[in-house]
Image (cartoon, rainbow, N blue to C red):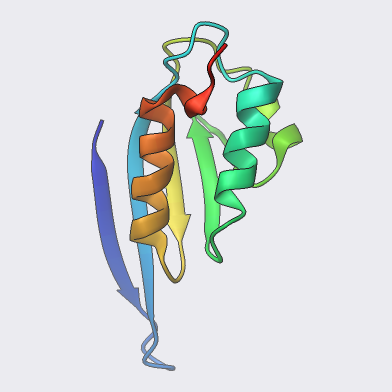
Length: 107
């Protein structure tokens, strides 16, 4: 699972936007069902940056449980986390860790 960070500047404002990407895999037996989707959305909401999950051509808001569930991601599904804004690198790292820890789901 790879993590990557890019810095994109806005020439007019001089502001830097950080974009981070991380390749993740769903590891828990039941896949990304309601409970881990809710935990993931709750964790993503802790960050002020935009957080998306990408599966093939589908890109959804990782702060929305309903959006996450539309991916129907089963065990073994590979996804890409796309995070942009202030704190993107920290958020991408933490959310990728959340996937590696099976969403901290004990069931």
